[in-house]
Amino acid sequence: MSQGNSCVSVAAGQARACTVREALDRVGGKWSIGILVAASQGPVRFTELERQVEGISRRMLTLTLRNLERDGLLHRRVYPTVPPKVEYTATPMALELYESLVALTAWAERHRTAITDARAAYDREHGAPAE
Image (cartoon, rainbow, N blue to C red; front, side, top):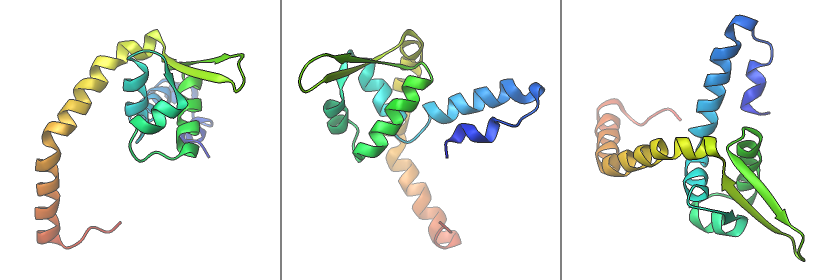
């Protein structure tokens, strides 16, 4: 099921390392960075996130939001309207992480072409990757 299940049965001495790994896995997840960057700009609604996070499905957005909320990185606020209005905001912990996420995102954007070129060169030399 969730990535956290692999850490349930670890010995007490490994618990801290496991928690760190889980946190890094969550924050570094495919969709988490885009969601956290968007939510760090101020309250954001589900439909806004759907538009801003390119390629995410409604189901993955829902699951990722739930996990980020569970980890204390997002706060979910439901307004008693019809239909209900739901907004997500970054918590202070997520705001602390924001600068690192922006730097990581900028790095990936700057090196996107170089990475694509390196992959193509590797594949030419070693054959297609086994995926």
